[in-house]
View 1 (spheres, rainbow, N blue to C red):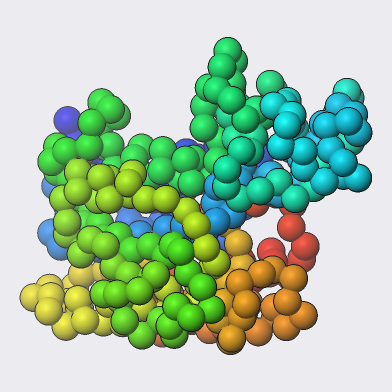
View 2 (tube, rainbow, N blue to C red; view 1 turned 90 degrees about the vertical axis):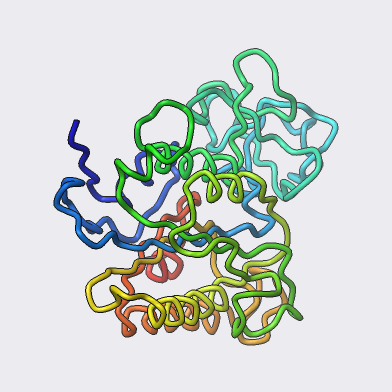
Length: 305
């Protein structure tokens, strides 16, 4: 049977469940039957593994049924749930400062929606891990598992006809470097382009999320790596190369950032992120962004767009 790969970014969007998803771009990477592809495109996947990826898409604010389950609107770790992403009948009390790690409500129904709410324990109708990182991993596996048989293997590589590489950033801090080396530090290339799908999936599945968001530095390393890889590519004049970024937030560490999102000069980090994406585009690499998050202010939406 002849396979067709249509709009990789759109496939990711469909697979990242929940109404909170935001995407900046849904342009085709290519639409060709496998037999027509002579030079397989490259797609470098960048996964944000900052600590906030451990939240559900709703983020650090959820809603509960009464004030006894939060103290002065502050998260109470002694309450199991349900928590809801939006205020509604029976759950209008706002609960702030949901932690990134430890005991936190991440288990929901199979849709990761507000249908049953979110709990700290997995049981009954709430057994699906609805953290952003878990949703991202499932989405990536669904893309790699092109024949949808539950296993990522060489058959998927043949039918999809796209060469993947994998980069990630995790456990980043203000001392993590400026993003000039893709082989060391909290930002790094884990798998080269044209690595087997099974190896890519194993790498992605084994990742954990912690630390700040070093997005601009990671994008800069992606450009450096792609430039190097292109210089070694016998088909460099014909092969298209793309970057796919899966992220949940704005950079918090560029421009001497301290890792928090409350910095008065956050505009500098948003501007730096856009500049790094432009540098990738100027080098000939189109960037696709898949973003997680609840309703966001216009300046964050503008950055994503």
